[in-house]
Image (cartoon, rainbow, N blue to C red):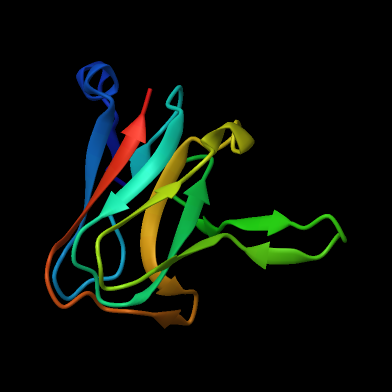
Length: 124
């Protein structure tokens, strides 16, 4: 499995770009080790939630879930609309995650993006 590593140059500029191709619903796998992500900005978007898939080895990806204060689990998601938006993201809560993919929609209900979509991820 191939993946893209976040470069020091990208960290120095404060962001990296992620592409979800036209006709697709997932980004390429990214090696985010030693990267703190703090915001996601998007332009045009076919309305759907943005969800995350994670992997420890870059091969087997699983959906990212959060455990709520009541002990329930829910899929980690951001409600993206078709207008440009910026969301705060705290990857400090994800210290053990090494590989990450961004996905349009949920497991079993992915949403195909009509055009190539670019996500701008604030990082350091």
